[in-house]
Image (cartoon, rainbow, N blue to C red; front, side, top):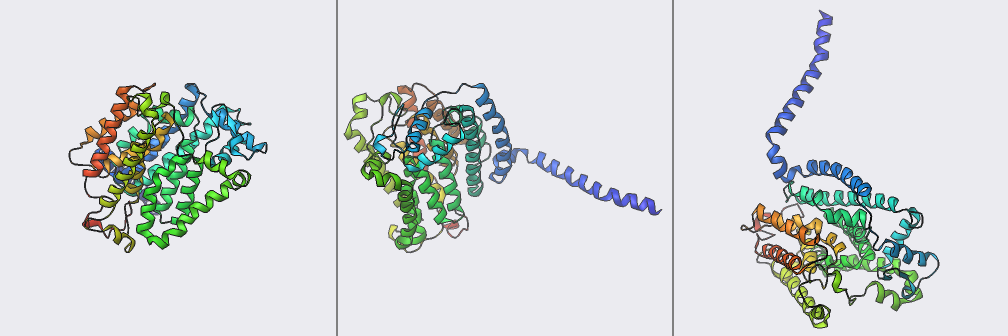
Length: 428
């Protein structure tokens, strides 16, 4: 009798576990449709996609031919520093002079040693594959915290983009390194680690100046969070880090370093442009065209800051007096996207500057007229435009139309700070 009781005792927990497992499976099956639609399942879907991406990136590395573009130039440039040249005007590669800030030099110097002086391309590809997976993880953490985008969209953000996989593991550009640091910075900002977030942001800028497109949004956030005086120490962190990283080069030739690594007037080649192919080359290169784009860029940033990045009925001056919670992501992503729309030229590797932000821009605050199908169509046309090589007038026009649709829905969509959530604890 006692033995029989012991047997039933041993079977009891197993039976209960089996019952709970069965209930969980039935619930998962019943909610299988919600799994792809409810943002609360972001981490579950993200885990599955990251596992799939391990196989996809491995397949791409071993089955698709590597294409040499800038890697050898990067290695030649950092090799010059290793050999003792600290004058930026004397650092050259196969594709031209070194035009990136000092953070780029240090990071790619590490890659230089990790890849046998830049000769082990397969090792470099595996390092960039790990960087790609780390970037995805950082992006998914952002989307999990914002809880705005339905998980089915992430299938298009991950597995469906040939161009992004190519930029990371087949081209080995420095743009992915800068964006990984940028997404790390945003995660720190969401965690209210403002000092560390600014530090990582400055480090991202030190790899590639394009990250400065996020700077207007970050400045706005610092002002509304800390006020003018409180924001100064955070801005000081960004500035001091740039000085410390660039110090060896600044001591050697400060003008040469600043003019090369932060050259805002650098001219782009018309043959590589993705967004302005439909223009005559003379107009594309004309200074007046560049100034017009800059004016449009600054004007739209001002309008968004004035009308969209603060609560309804709030004056812009009150932001300095009452720094409260804001949707961090919408401000930063919109700031960057406006810069993309008015860039003097977009090259193929620049796609990673905003690729991972597109789902948020399209789904977080959608206008009513922009259905799921239309949003997916916009994503598809953008991907098609970036995969058209060489770019054509049609692909460039299609890209601008898609950008215009996103800008329009960002402007006409629901107010990002409705009164019902003004006191919410979440910072999107």
